[in-house]
Structures are given as structure tokens and as C-alpha cells.
Length: 504
Image (cartoon, rainbow, N blue to C red; front, side, top):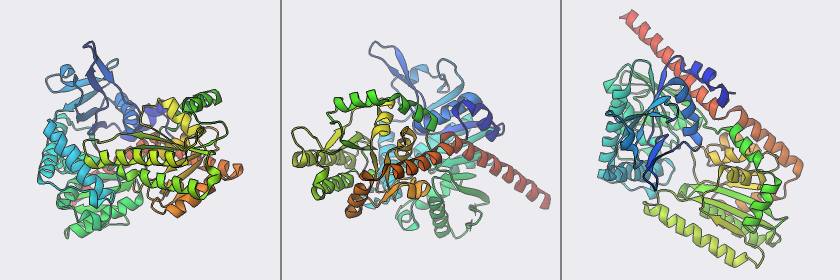
């Protein structure tokens, strides 16, 4: 297993002397004006960005991203670049500028009102608009131009996520010998969903510009290969070898289940001791002896929050013994509030919480505690550590890192993870989590009852196995796996090119 402190050897070795050129929508560092006019720097708070950042610092790479900070233009040079982090200047951040209209149509439009719902099975949420597609294509070209500008012969280009479905092909046309890889952070759906996308052939063609295309799970890889087979008569799909030969180029398709920084989360949760938990419960009026279930989600319609609240209401209705004995703590984070579906969801959740609390609450017990306030990492992971049950019930999710964060934070190994069978994490966790179909309210209630009454010995055995899984394949193992595979594919590509030149 690779740890953060060991990153200079294992991951540098996996890179094989290459320099990373990362492409993402969000930037790792943002410059903003403080109230007094001074420029401050927001740093990576966690997750993938915080994982890649130390790799970039060790290898002096380049990161291409949208400059969305109000002071970003103040600090860049004539090439729109700035060295980061400020105190050590270890790698280059190349900023791409987007107009308000481009953000509206490329990000809020095609990315999040077309690709996002299609990939999550929410076709009814899809809003097709010609201007969305046109702007998405134009912005992908802008990012592709920035990649070409920053590229050198030892660059390994790594696109991140669904915002760049077209850019790999655009870069390939300018740099035919470049090594391009891509990680798609959301599900890849079946052909029935993909073919409903008016521009699906262009998106598939764009992604096949990569040498290596990564998804969370094997099932997403299989879906992608099926889509290519259906869409292009001239494509040769090798399912056993997990690769596609198309337009004279080979794209390898592999699964890399994204994970979390286990050691960091475990360390922060350990700081939240029993005294902290007592103070936290008091601050939210959670009585002593009351079991606590937790949900931590962005306010997105894919997360299944209304269905979760319905299941809890049914539990308190059909099992009144849990009234006054179980409190559900829902941490919600507003997301994409400029899109009407997201604003409506926020209102729906707030109304459901108020309705449940009116129906079941008493003078000294509140069934659901709902907050959108920011929690520190210690508070968040402490809540995960001390909660008896976690409800991770998305209707569809590429992976769901909250499930893995909950497991990593389970310092005392006495919690139960209730996990949707529609989350990518379910393929890894299997029977060690308590499985639900988030749309089957009867099953949801039954499994809730099972989790809440589970014997201590079974709780411990399940959670120990879950923690072993996350610790063994953490964020840094994911990085090493992805980059080692890229290096192997790069060598294989070179060998094939040499073989082809000899046979001419």
C-alpha cells in the first residue's frame, strides 16, 4: 500500500520518469481577495485533488484547470501560469478562463444537465439544448489547446471526469504521439441510455482518443465496450483484452475503484474522542443513549435523500419503539443551485424533514437533525466514528466515497454501513455492508431494523473487513495502480509501434 509519506518512491516509480499533465475542471489552488484587499489562497481540502497534489509537487508537473478565483488573473504570468503552492512553487498551474456564458452552458448545461443525468439513469432530468453542446465542444477545444501548449515529450496527460469528453480526440489530432489517459468519475451507463444522447458518437469518439480510459468498476468498462461496439461498425472491440481498436488507434479500458486517504481520515477521527462526542451531541440536543444514524451527501437527486427520509418515516411509523431511541443526522451540502432540479430537491428535503419532525417529534426528542452548515474534518469524521449506522443510499452513484470515509473513520469498529446496491462501492464491499435497494422502502425499513439491532460481534467482524478493504486499496494505491497501468500501456504501445515498423 502506498502512503502519503512514501509517495516520492512508489508513485514516481509508477510514472517511470514521465511528468504528469493533469486536466480538470476545478483547480487545486484558487486565489481570492480578502476583505482588506490582500490575496489569499484556498488549498485542496481533500479527496482526489489533495491526493494528486503531492504527486505533482514531487514530479514538477503541470495542472490545467479553470481559473475561477476573483484574484486568479492577478497572480498569473503572460502565459496564464502560476507556480504552486505559494510557499514552495513545486509545479505549474495553467489557468483557462471561461466566460459566464461558457460556465452556464458547458458546466451547468451540457456537463450537468445532459451527461450527468444520462450517466446516472435520470433521462427525465436531461435538458438537451444546442447551445449546451456547442459551448461544451468549444470549451473542450480551449482546454485541448492549453494541453498542447503545455505538453512536452515526457508528459503523461491525465484528463479528469466527464467535463472533457471531446478533448482527448482534439489533443490526439495535434499530438498523435502523446500518451493520453482519462478517468471518468461517474457511472458509464448501458447502450440504451447512451444512444439517447444526440451527440453520443462524438463523445465516444472523443474518449477513444485516449490510450487508457479508466472507470470505477468492471461493469462500467463492460458498458463502455458495448456502447463502442454498437456505435461504430469499424471498431474492433476485444472484451477479453479490454481494449478497442478504432481509427488506427488502440484504447485500453480498465477499472480503478477510486478510494480515500485512509490514514488521514483514521487519524482525524481518532481525535474525536468520547468527550468530543458528548459535546457534539449536546450541541445538537441528541440525548444520551439515543442511537444515531448519519447521512452525508451533496444535495443531488442521485443521492436518494427523499427516499431515505421516507424509509425512516416508515420505520418510526411501523416500529414505534424507535421513537425517542433513534436520531437521524443528515448533513447536506447545497450543489449546483443554479439548476432548477437542484433547488427543488433542496426544498423537498427541507419540507420532508419538517414534516417528519412535526409528526414524530416530542418536546425532548427530534427525529431528524438536518444541517447545511460546514463541519470541520474532525467533526465530520468524528460524526462518522460515533454514529451507530451510516445510510449511504444513492439511486445511482459512480463510487460514493462517503461510504469509504465512514469506514475509514470507524476507529472503534462498531458501526454498520447500510449501502445501496446502486453505488459503485457495493462491488467492493459486498456482504460486509448491509445491502438495500434504495427504491424498495419495505426492504430499506427491514434492513434498517436489522442494522440497528445487530449484535456487537457481527458489527465488529463486518467493519473490520470493510476497513481492511479500504486500507489496502486507499487513494494512494489507486494512484499507483492507475499510473502503473498507464506506464505498462505506454510500453506496450511502443512495442507495437516498433513491431509495425519492422513489418513494413
